[in-house]
Image 1 (cartoon, rainbow, N blue to C red):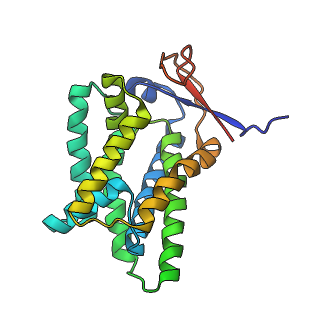
Image 2 (image 1 turned 60 degrees about the vertical axis):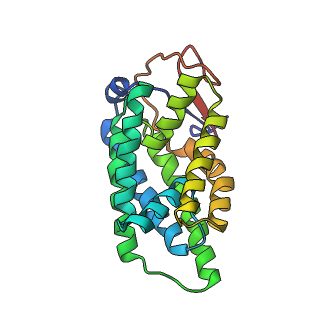
Length: 237
């Protein structure tokens, strides 16, 4: 007999449907735990000094050039990315707005309390721990089913409006911001490669345990790999 956690349903909901789908106390709590831990994980990767994910390398490069904190740059970039949602006809959810602000706050708070470390072994340990925590925290906030982050929504919006493959669009955007981050002096290195290889499988690993099942499922037609009758994606452990 399958475990009750062996499958979970991740739905594709409009902002209104997200608010009407129920279980809000649980979902909001999970959302903010996930976003907080996501910011902590980014702070850990920054302190490892071994390289950052593409968007974080971009944020780091801007931070180095303009003298603003990493968290402030993340927030300002998130706001600018949300403005790009307008021509793409994307509607932000509660989780989108929270993601835009709260991750940056959590990053700066983490960097204030987490000191710089010396020695390659502690740096690698901090990097690996940060990447694993990033996968878990990403699954937590996605699993709350309260909307994607601003950068994820940008990717899906471009894919929908251009008719391109989500994989191609995501790769193009991330390679672009990575190149810009590198040119601006952002931290690119071992951590960049590790993140690219590991974060997707890690999110997939944790997702079945943290997706909040919603009592009121709203039928939504979403083409491309999902159940067009229900607008849901089943996540298997």
